[in-house]
Image 1 (tube, rainbow, N blue to C red):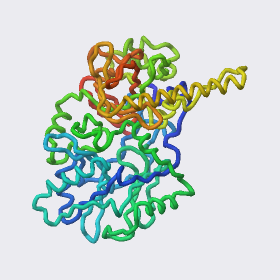
Image 2 (cartoon, rainbow, N blue to C red; image 1 turned 180 degrees about the horizontal axis):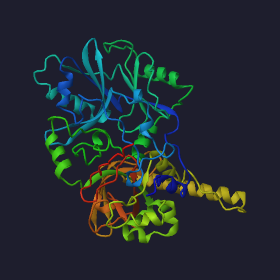
Image 3 (tube, rainbow, N blue to C red; image 1 turned 135 degrees about the vertical axis):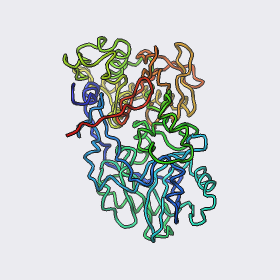
Image 4 (cartoon, one colour; image 1 turned 45 degrees about the horizontal axis):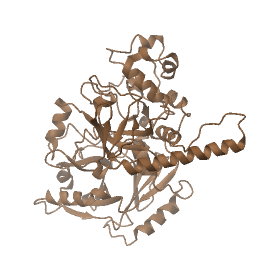
Length: 488
């Protein structure tokens, strides 16, 4: 079998290789975007253990390693090789988790910072701002008679930051704690400004904390406001109220280190466990790029469509070369085999960003030689203007909860959970797995698909892709295939 990832070849054919991490920068979240809740006191761990999907009695697992097709680990150049993160930077203090209601539906996702203050347990809960009030009420509802556990909102005295372009989370200055995002390193290093005392009584304002952090970062990581929202959508990660009333597995939290299937009982466990062990996952949240039906379909999706429709026999030699499939491979892969190239493009967040930039007109193809400079400038301006209008149009019609309807049969194939990232047409949608070709059946994803979004009558095309942190998906169950690590 070919032992290297197919990502680099796909990107080379459509615009070049991209870095394994996003460019250097930092961002501070306003309290409207991220809030900090606290749970403190004797028994705090036992209390939260019964409310979250992760296991607080064990260290958080390392972020999932990015893999190419057939679950081959990527080289350090091709992806974020989490095996290369030093042990002291695989933080034992930051957990990714979901809070569920009694029916097993998500209240919100969150990240939990675990620490001890004056011999007492404390958890600082980093939660999306749009779900913070509901989570606070949820925590208080299930506190019951735990008189030694206190619950509070520390958003007025703490701030959340993120840093891009580094995995080094050690050596935090006084007043800060830091850890690589436990869901995936492409989302950056998470930093929490906790003030300079142990009682969470900082008197600085959010603006002052923002300025202080910017001063610390100025020489190495410039301001990158708004970057996080773009990265997480390119990486296929929904948050907060985007997840409300959905199940954790539909939202890929089985892939994001947020669920322990070995811990004891917790609120909402029954549906989560039953789905994992006996159910079929028919819908998942995934990133999709929306394009005009007149636009030429990029090669990664062209090859994916051919592969779904005709199998390996449908690929031309150029596609096989790009997928690094040689004659020996063809004897081992294909229909009926457990080994199969990805049925949709697999892209890292930076790689997807490069493709989306080209599709959105932010990066223009090189003009033909010999074309007059004036004509070149005129064509470039026209292309950029048309792309900008299209981006604005998609932004206006692709709102949250808008249905995606296939014009071929009039059936709803997905629902938008997060509107397009600013300046792009990439959005997050809960898609039917069979309609994108990842779950068994006669339906295949087609490069000539035509869809309607919401109430709009304009026909569009959607290009779904799988983030690199997704494992290979079992076509019968919709779950991730179990990876058996090779012994040295």
